[in-house]
Amino acid sequence: MCDKYIYELTMKVRDYEVDAEGIVNNANYLHYLEHTRHEFCEQAGLTFRSMHEQGLDPVVSHIDIRYVRPLGLGDSMVSKLALSRRGPVFVFRQDIYTTSGEPVVRAVVDIVSFENGRLSRGERLAQAFKDYLG
Image 1 (cartoon, one colour):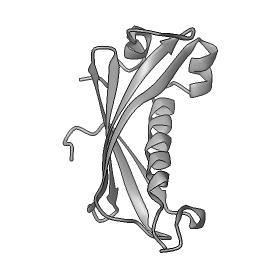
Image 2 (image 1 turned 90 degrees about the vertical axis):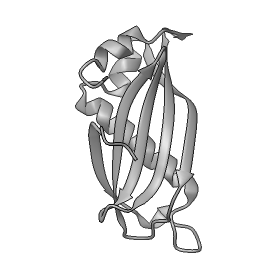
Image 3 (image 1 turned 30 degrees about the vertical axis):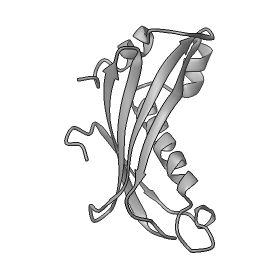
């Protein structure tokens, strides 16, 4: 749980995301987290296409995820994120909640930045995220 979220996105579980038990397959939570990061970047004025065209490619280097409770078909969720920086690594603290506020998933996602195919110190990405970094 984080108290400094800078972005949130409401989503709904779709039929193809549940398994035979009727709950969301664990891999789909990674998609929810990624979709939230992409939507956040777009709100910040960065699309992945435009970044790539400029030679800037943010890449996941590590994910730590804890599943707290399952979601089922038709359930709605609120995916929230906070952003910080640890040297060249951008740390996305991402949590998913039910719409009533119960925790579903807690994750920390480390992102590194490649510039023109080479690992960078992330200064261009830091500049793009300057309004969101604490």
